[in-house]
Length: 263
Image (cartoon, rainbow, N blue to C red; front, side, top):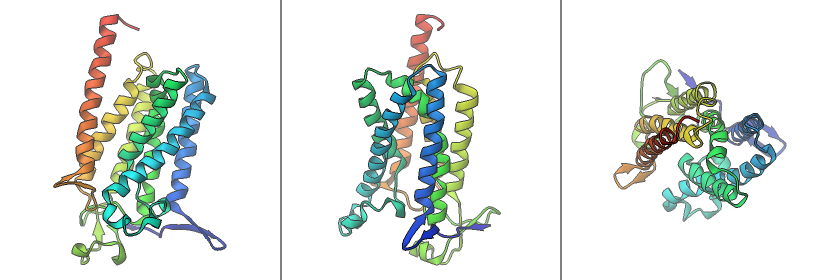
């Protein structure tokens, strides 16, 4: 059993530094450094990658927030001043992926850069960044799962429990499940697939997308705060779509490479 120490990391006078924002900053710094090194290893211009990442990260932050706000519009329409309050939580990863890939891809096309190669260079960083960032949910006591008595159960304070589960104290730490899964994806991509797939642009990113979607589909099934599309969990619907898209994309890449001969 474990429990969150609270959302505040430390105070600087009247300014409260929250774990959520601090972890996002750490994830961005580590992920950017990793992608920068990968660009140098591949003989690409790392400065151009940094420019692309700056645009993609801003777009990812905006996209992830807007995605979350859109699915909770009944609340935010009455509390418009809360929309920018990302430090309180409320970032949807699927919105971030969509925003970041779209903005980064448009920038790459404008600069005549290979979109597929640059997606591959950041794929391991995305997985590692998500593994780190998920711990923000732990400190905010959000994104937890159904009640459980497992040894690794997560204690949730009464204030954060949904009304219909107010009598339960311990819940599945779904943030932990996803964080561990994302870290395993990072290790698999970085140590196992990064170099063998270098001759197939786009394949590494599609592996990241498919593996993340597979894990997210199952962890989402345990959560009690899912964003909904009618009677379906939005994250599960999107995960299935992305998983299928990644498998089709990989099949097309390998089919094309097989037709063209070994690279």
